[in-house]
Length: 289
Image (tube, rainbow, N blue to C red; front, side, top):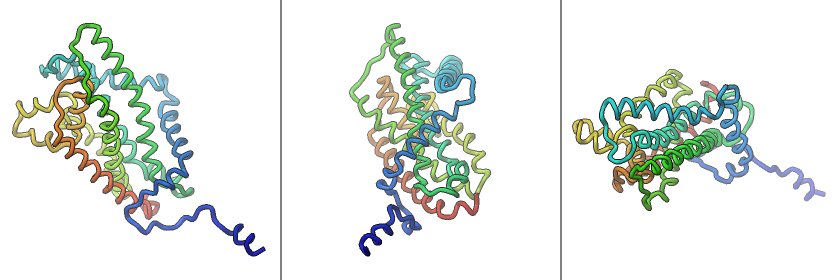
């Protein structure tokens, strides 16, 4: 009888305060995988649920941005893209850049946007920003499909488009882009709990960051035209991801091994700092939000 009583008193899960600053419990995340899938579906469906065009906005935004960049930077400013059609050059860059900005802007509001849920139900808080990064992969996949369609169109139009073997590493590059966005987003979301006005600067900061991330121009161009400011781009890890993605997709530009190693180091450092700050903030954020 005592053994049966002991078994009935055993808990399936035990929720305790986190004593470690740096915690990433993969086992617990796996246990809540159904909730992660639910959040991913929520992020995909609810964003455009009450809009007229719905998921078509996933296509409209990069297409119109590419057209705008082509007119302003290629036709007016005269930026050359070698043998690559300027529109395709811009579309490939914007597609990758949008994934980063979607991850950053979505995760930067984690605590404020989910304060009601966090204050009532327990689950690993890291699931919320993770769901945003994963759901944005669906958006990226749609935009990548559009890129492939235009790639085929320009190829049959006679454009000098060639593939190279580095294309197989493209998913790894996108994964690092998502991890970097996740890390920065967790840092910002933790700071927003105390400094509300910081959230208003994110959109402005992202726009400024785009101009020093080699999104609409090759990296070598800024070194030639503005050598005194080239160091800003060279120390920007996002610029190496954008430049490398163009090389993998369009065989234009170059891949800097040193630059990618630097980028991967910055990505891992940013992620672990973000995780450290995120774990520390989740203990007491409910008192400040």
